[in-house]
Amino acid sequence: MSKDTNIPPFGEEMFNAFKQFKVPGIDMEALVASHQKNMDLLTSTQKKAVESTNSIMELQNNYLKKAFDQWNEQLKHNCTKTSFEEKAACHTQATKEMSERALEHMKEINTIIVKSNEKIIDSIQKHFQESFNESLNFVKKNKGKF
Image (cartoon, rainbow, N blue to C red; front, side, top):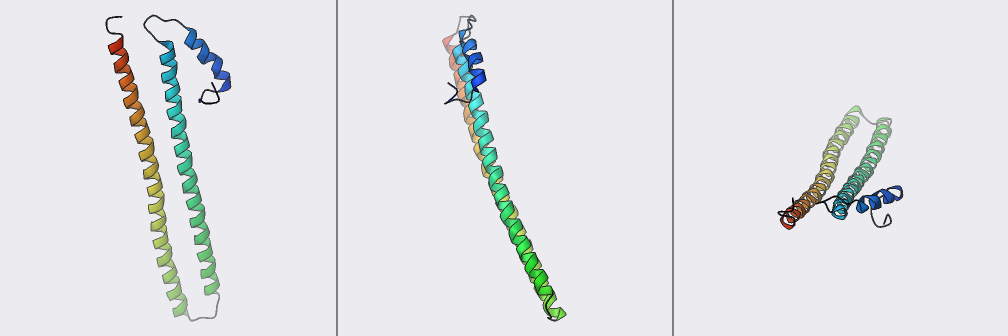
C-alpha cells in the first residue's frame, strides 16, 4: 500500500485498522480513500511548490552570476587609463543594462510564480469539486438511512 500511495509505512497499519471499524452509516473505506485523496493533493501541491522554488533559485543564481560578471568588467574598465568622460559613459551604459536586466529578471520570477499558483489552484479546485460530488452522491445514496 505505501509504495503507490502517500501513506508512510508506519501509518499503513493505522489506516488498515480504520478500515476495519464498523460505524453505522459511515463507509470507513470511503472515508480512508477520501483522506488518501487529500494527502495526494497535499503531496502534489508541495511538489509543484518545490519545483517552482527550484526554478526561481536557478534563475536567481544565473542572474547574480551575470550581475557580478558585469560588475567585475566595470571595475576593470574603471581601472584603465581612459578619460573621465569615457568612464562615465561606460558606467551610465552599464547601469542602464543592469536596470533593464533587473526588470526582466523580476518579470521572469513573477511568471514562474503565477504559473505555479495557477497549477496549484486548478488542482485544489478540481479536488474540491470531486469531493463535493462524492458527498452529494453519498447523501443521495444514503437518503433516509439516518
